[in-house]
Figure 1 (cartoon, rainbow, N blue to C red):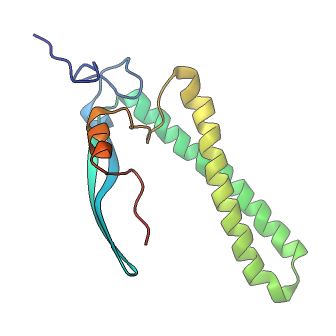
Figure 2 (cartoon, one colour):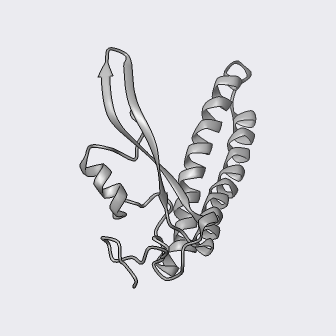
Length: 153
C-alpha cells in the first residue's frame, strides 16, 4: 500500500517538479538556522540541513542556473576592471577597481541567477533550488522560528 506525506507528494517524488521520481544522489540539502540568541556583538544559532527530494533532471537544471550566474558575472567583471583601468586616475586605481569588481560580481550573480531561472526553470514549472517554503519539514521548522537566512550580528 502506498502512503502519502502531508503535502500529497509521493515519498519518492521530486519536490521541485512534482513529475519525476526523486533519486538519492539528486537530493538537495538546504541549510536552516534557528534557536538564535543575540548578545552584545555576538550571535549564537544552530544550523541544520534539510534533505529535499529531487530528481536528477532538476539537479541538472539547478546546476545550469548556477553556471549561468557565473557566465554572466565574468564578462561584467572584465568590463568593470577594464573600464576602471581606463577611466580611474592612478591614485584611485586600487580602491576603484575593488569597488568596480565587487559591484560587477554582485550584479552579475543576481542577474545571472534571475536569467537562469527564467531560461531553465520557469518554462518547465520547476521550483528554484532554495524555494522550499512549501516543503512540509521546512514549513514546520519555519513555524518554530527557523529561517533560511544565516543570522547576522
